[in-house]
Image 1 (tube, one colour):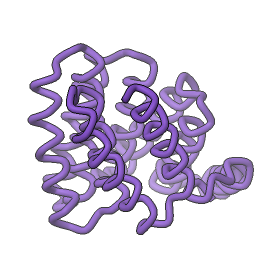
Image 2 (cartoon, one colour):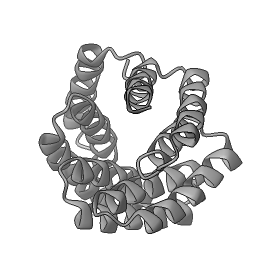
Image 3 (spheres, helix red, strand yellow):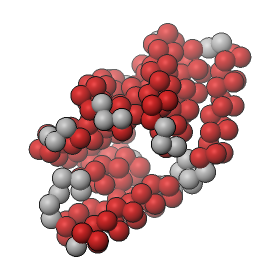
Image 4 (cartoon, helix red, strand yellow):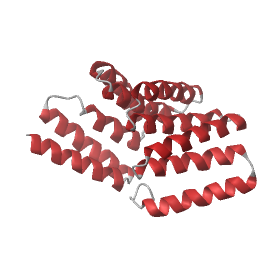
Length: 201
């Protein structure tokens, strides 16, 4: 539902997941449900609630002793934080997530967490550091075939790119990656960014 841009349906599913997890009284299920709810809240533009939900997901994952779920929670929290412009916190949270993903052998997760770290560093004006981290995120996404992660990383590479022609190529690649992944919602974001790039040109 999120990929298709049907956020109302995604929210209903997340609520149903949470209710099932609450009844089961199992921290691992609760962490999973909260991670999904956090993603929905962030996509709805409600990053403040998303940050609270993601922090609760991290606590539930820690209680369940599930580092894989904890990594996802930290990644969600980092995204919420950088969207709230809490960039230093976001960078540190993303670094924790990347480390946990790496320890679990989750290459896609590691790449996505590095994308969040790069977004935070970009928000702080640290363009060179963001570029270095993004290069690694792109490489990891390509390595494991994570098209969603690749689309995000390629899009973010344009944020500090002064060459409009290069930005347009990156955005076209990002659009293709999201299209192949079936993410209509992210394709809409890239179309918007392409429009801005052509307007600037």
